[in-house]
Image (tube, rainbow, N blue to C red):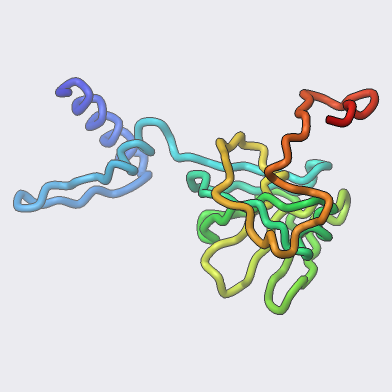
Length: 183
């Protein structure tokens, strides 16, 4: 325990000298770091990364992966050409474009909701409501592996008639030369 504390103090001192943060303390109130900050200092800050299919647009998020959902609303289904869209909210303040933001276009799919996509390859990357504190990542564009499962399937009242999340359809590691036989 004492050795760990010495290592942590050394890391804090080095990173404080590098100007990454400032510690203020007084004899009556010694400096304290949260457990999350201690983890960040030792292991580095968690970062999510993502990009479009062609790689021209990319983003980073300085945040831990958040619980995500599979949205079955008609708008998500039509936007993605799929039975549902996997969506993860992340803090807007932690999100930034790192490449290709000039290649983004937006479609206002409902009043105030903008879906951002790459104009080269068409990948739908994220959605946002400007006044909201979170943006909604489209998990198919994540480059960072994220553990599941989803928290919920939402908008099942709008779901595609041909897909049931409880269906025990065979799972294949890659594409099959022909469809598997019916059950």
